[in-house]
Every structure is written in C-alpha cells, then in structure tokens.
Length: 365
Image (cartoon, rainbow, N blue to C red):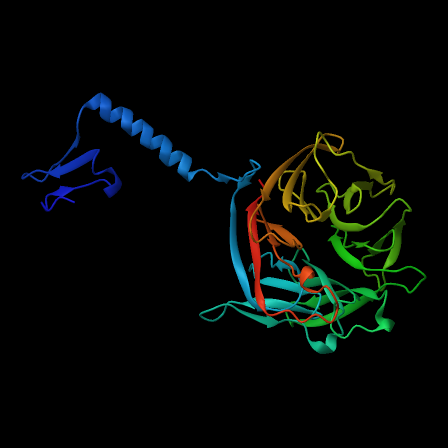
C-alpha cells in the first residue's frame, strides 16, 4: 500500500491495475497502470477468473455443488428426519432409536438440542415429521423397529401417526394402524390440501390414509406389485400422488382412480434406491437417493403427462453424505439429514458414541 494519505486503491487485489489519487484541490483522479491494451487484456482475464471462482463448484461427476451445512452435536440416536416450521423456521428432528422428537433451541447464545416430545407420549421409533400448512400442528409417523430403545416382541408391527399442538407443545392424539396379519413399518407421509394424510408402509404393500377428522388409519391402496414403499409427494394440482419404491423406482397414483403406474426411468438414469420424495418449486420432484453406492440428491423433471422427462443430480460426493435421511423443501432449498446413523446400529444392542449429525441444504430451483 502507498503511504501517501491522499492515495486510495480500489481493493488491494487490484493495486497493480488501477490507482486513484486525491489531488490537492480535493478531486479524485483514476488511472490505469502500464500499457492500456495490455492492462485491459489482463483485466478481462481477471474478470473471468473471478467469475469462475464465484460460480458453484462441480464435483467429479459434474453435479453442481451448492450446499451449506450445520451440525447437531452430541447425538447418539438415529436421526431420520427434520421439519422446519413454515413461519419461524424452528427445526425439529425425528429420532428412531431414542423414540422421541428433538428441537433445536436457539434462544440462547449457542444452539442446544432439547426434547420436544415427552417420554409419557409413548412414541415408538420416530420416522417422518411434517407441519400442517398453518404451522399449528406437527405430525409424526412412528413405528416399532428393533433399533429403538426398549423394543419388545409385543411391539412388532405397531405403528401410528401422532399429532402435536404447537401452541401447547403437547401430544394431541395418535392414530393407530389396525392390527392384522401383515408386518408394518410406517415410514413417510404426505399431507393433502383436503386434510387427508397418505402414509407409506415400507413392509406391507399398502398405502394408508387418515381421512379428515378420522380416528384411525384406513387402508387406501393395497397393491401386490409394491415392494418397499418410502417417500410420498403430492403434486400441486392435488390429483397425483408419487411414491418411491426402494426396489423399483417411482409409482404415480392418480387419487381419483388409484391406478398405480410404475414410471420408467428416463435415459440412463437410475430411480431405484430412492427414499425421501418432495414436490419441487415450479413443478417436478426432488428425491433423496441413499440406496446407491454414491448417495445423491436428484431433481426429476416431469413431462406434460406427469412422467419423468429427465433427471439431474443436485448434490453428491459430499463427505458427510454417508447415510441420508429425510428432509424438507423450504424457500427453494432441500434441507436434509446427511448421516442419520442407521449404520451405527448393526445390532439393536449397539451403543455408539455421541457424534455430530450433519444437516445439509442445497438449492432445488
């Protein structure tokens, strides 16, 4: 830097290129250093370098890397899901192992994880979380699995939806599966505009429905071709339900007819191993793919018939993406669990050390 107090520079990284000098009469004079043509050529080169540096980076597969991350510290459970309040953006997390719902308390100088649900609520393993459109109710799917604390043989095949009142932060009601001869694990669910809730059963070939003002889950669609149902997404028209099948791909189900169709994967894309599924802003779908060697976040573009037109990779290869969980699309971004922790429980009796659970966020526009 020049020591003359009357001399200023337009950013220290450009000191070699541009200089402005304050004259004795108070006016500022700007000049280019060196040959004008040479200087302009270098300036263009530098502009391109800066532009490339500012652009989102690509990973080895060519997928755009546009992500941000934050951590939940000291967690020892299986953090399968998150939900963000539509107004306050307060974050809640479903824990399969600890049979509870956590929330991230940011009222102090540092964020602290606290239990939202009470032990007396009788939750089983907590899988998906969703807020009602008005933000007044937090819904959770809960099922018995061996990886949860206190699992007993009598719990097998139990499952229910639970609703919490956000104003009181207390359990409002539970809506049980009917007991039958099937095995059941309620995984994900989708809230419909009419107040219905559609729930995927990962073990039985069934999609359940809780009607508006209903008291119990009802069998909505049982289809022998279903293998392992996971995420659900309702399109904005409210007429089509899309459901991921871990072993097969994506089913499209028109709500009025319930005629399930397995959609073809476009081009060389792979739609197997999909877990979470979400409606994308502006149309199409966003999917969490954790059943492939490289775990990925996918953007699925649909044609006029509602079938897959093309698939693009939004995010992959991030070092934290070891065991993807569920997430939520909010403000044009997918926020999701990067390392849920299922692999830490090779047996139900496993006692892994506390760790950081990473929440990643990537643009879906």
